[in-house]
Length: 190
Image (cartoon, rainbow, N blue to C red):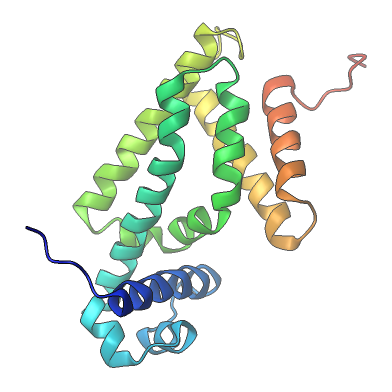
């Protein structure tokens, strides 16, 4: 029978994850002391959870990937018609997770499990693009690799605006969906 984790341990780990996401996204070279201070836990507690900075980054990366996968699970499972719009709805609120992964990727990818998870995530994005092509959401003649890159860049634009406070999450979803599915040309085509 698995041992029940102490609530304090769970809370301190959650605080470390959130503080690590914020601190390392803003400053990818932030040290363990900065993360401990930002999380409100002592350095000893931080080191008990993550014995090194590399372990911290890799642990947070895996947690971020778990959260992203969990958010996408219903989208991929349902294979609904508006898969692109629904995926934007799910991913745009997770901007801080992607920002962390982007800021710390050179350290996170040292872990083969993280690297494998990112490859799987890329495969999921490519599968989503194939599905969207089959459903007529996007042009079937565009390469899935191209569509996946455009999708990622559209997400990045939404996250950048959110981070600057230039838009709301709901508006970012609307803009990302419209831009990705219909382009940025005028409706009259001129």
